[in-house]
Length: 276
Image (tube, rainbow, N blue to C red; front, side):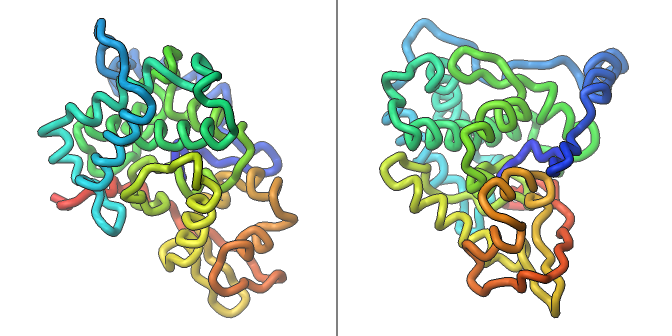
């Protein structure tokens, strides 16, 4: 979510079992299936990171240069000249709202930082993963659980970053902004998220999401909607009495409140172009 280290979450707490995660952590690396955990961030250097404004201007330029109008990413071009994206990842590794609270002194600044950071880290992770065809199978676990990113000096997985930090900020619209670079994600914008217009941007992303026939289809009294709403049901129900009611906040045409909800299978294919 968009994003998504998208493990299923429901009001009943139907999350990936901690025991399963522990077993995977202990067993799979020893079998050589996932490889060693690696820091996705480039090595730290003596020079200090750029300012937030400089880093975000760089990431904005990366988005404009390498993301097309459909939200697909030219990962090959990024891999051939990764310096710009690496500088953004290095900044994220050095600075975050947790270690520089005076810089990120509003909820909008905090949330915009984390959305941009997650998207940059996921983009870089795809490049470091060798631009896989899809984030499925063992690649899924390596990408979201075993590879490590660094945010403000703290090492974590993309799964932990999304679920333990970003989701706790309490805005379900993040699921229309976070992007794990797969086809099932919301469309990746060609612009960064900015604190001064974040609310408008998140509303626009939500409206675009529900206007996309790949994410929402209504036929008779059945609403087919992206599995994102299944993965994060509890987040949406914290902001509306039902999924239908939440959808109707942003859908171009209201869905029937008594409709049956079914979910469109999430597509983990890496959203790249040219698609070779």
